[in-house]
Image (cartoon, rainbow, N blue to C red; front, side, top):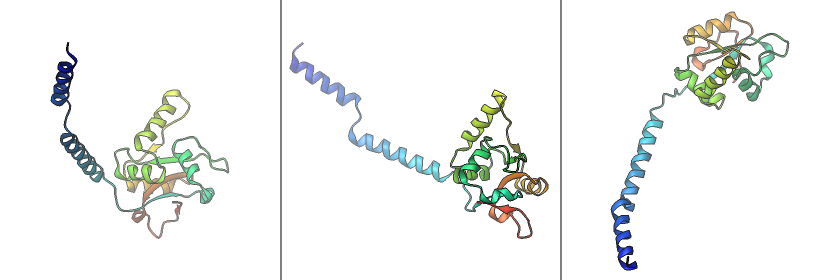
Length: 164
């Protein structure tokens, strides 16, 4: 085949099958707009999430220790008492906000960690409560429990210790 004909034939295929810069730009713009819309539609509340407990040893709790507690790697308070970890359902907006903002993890990463512990037989999932009100009640009843609630959910009369 003649090189001139081969070059013309190759150019015609490229022109026919490769999108032009204009089409690539349009697809990129549509993709960016779609991502922005999806990100903007994520349910994130404007209120702050507080980590709360009764246990006095939690006053000096670092964020890294909190992450260890919620990934079930740290199971005991410094005095030796067992930590009862309370969580809201994974689909909860508050749980998503807590995971992302406080723990700097995605909810599925927490769930995957808990599943790994359960399936390997080396640990248990945290205690899941059905609502914010139930979380508050459990935190007030269990002295070694740790949980999270929106800032406005914690009343002034409550004797819970607010950590973060």
